[in-house]
Amino acid sequence: RAQRALIRESWQRVRGDPVQHGAVLFGRLFELDPDLLPLFQYNCKQFASPQECLSAPEFLDHIRKVMLVIDAAVNHLENLPCLEEYLCNLGKKHQAVGVKVESFSTVGESLLYMLENCLGTAFCPDVQEAWTKLYDAVVKAMQRGWDA
Ligand code: HEM
Image 1 (cartoon, rainbow, N blue to C red):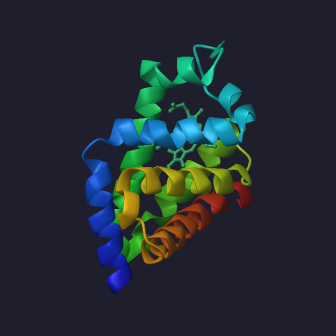
Image 2: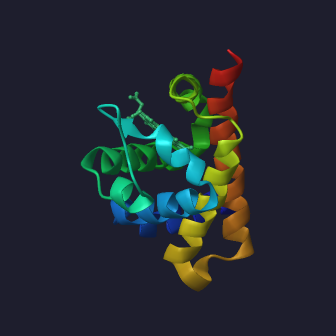
């Protein structure tokens, strides 16, 4: 379907520099919901500011992990159910570190913000709709981890 092509094309631009674009995503996320910052702790140490978090190697690794999950979804558009079990487990892990299901809608908003920031005028309503659908499917699968 045409939506899949839009996803693949637009992701091509992001995947060239995942950490930079991921930092735009999480920078926006902390702007929209500063309460998410304390959920990221490495060796029990809390970050004093989003800037400090966004420059910590452990957090940059989390950015890479997030981008890899999105990459996997983009690579499996024809067969998302094969990621279902992985995503459910990933949801469980996020529940365990104190993430609320509702926060994933703020993450979705931040994802669209990052895409618009990266794609500029190529971020048209069709692209937005295609990404919203894909992201919703990923979140729905992760959500099962909370219900389980
Ligand atoms: C692991 C927090 C969103 C993918 C983690 C960890 C924390 C965390 C604290 C464990 C430490 C670490 O590995 O750095 C959050 C918060 C989020 C969020 C607060 C937003 C509210 C996401 C999203 C994805 C994702 C949207 C991908 C779609 C991962 C992966 C891991 C991870 C792949 C590693 C899991 C493993 O060790 O098996 N997350 N995360 N995270 N997160 Fe997130």
